[in-house]
Length: 74
Image 1: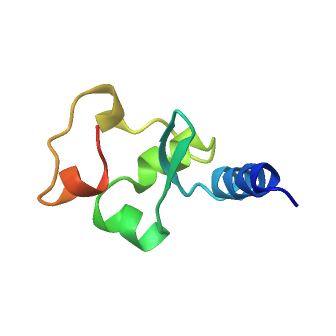
Image 2: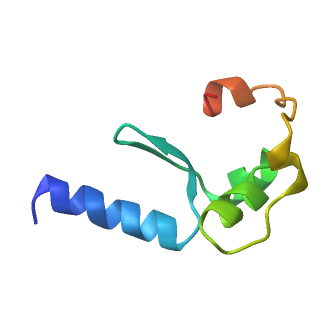
């Protein structure tokens, strides 16, 4: 397996299991479900993976929780 194949497989698994918080420019932020809950982004991750309804707060800017800026760049 090449590095490119491994990256594609990791991305596929992360997307399939709603573990992606954000992705852009070849960078995927994979977040554990417990951490998703802790930072209030689980509904967003589920929605982006097609596994849940659109969260109400996704349509408006939600204030970041303390420490969230460092974990999830916007």
